[in-house]
Amino acid sequence: MKKIFISSDHAGFNLKEQIKKKFKKKYIFQDLGTNNLKTSVNYPDYAHKLCKKVSKDSKNIGILVCGSGIGMSMAANRHKKIRAAVCYSVKNTKLSRLHNNANIITLGSRLTKKNIAFKCIEVFINTKFEGGRHKKRVIKI
Image (cartoon, rainbow, N blue to C red; front, top):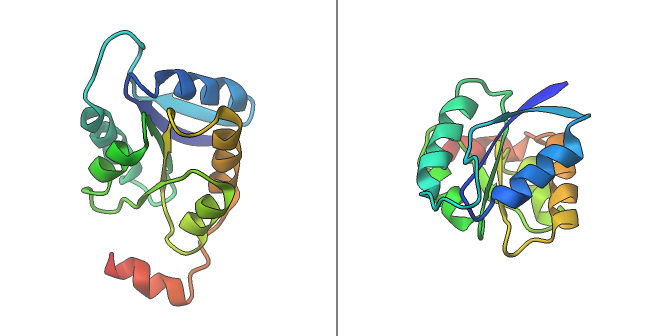
């Protein structure tokens, strides 16, 4: 089973829990928090924690969930070896992997319906980087 790092802030907590429940038979999740909905937390703290884990091995991937997906993505993309993509559709998710070799998917719990988020995660996990002309572009990042 593939191991996936996952983290959220308070706004993304419910969707994070639903993701873990939906995919528990297919993937092993290492949940890096937050651990409750009631306590307001700072999303960069959770993004940084996950990025440290993902950046240790090029095979690692992560899922970050906040209210919009944008804050987590901005915090994550400050790390070397991280390419975090805000995903809101199957098409943009697929392109984030094919062309950008994204290693973290960020989701907005307030903007993305649960079933779309689930589809995006499946596509993210199962789509491989095309390489080729895209490789030199990714290297420039």
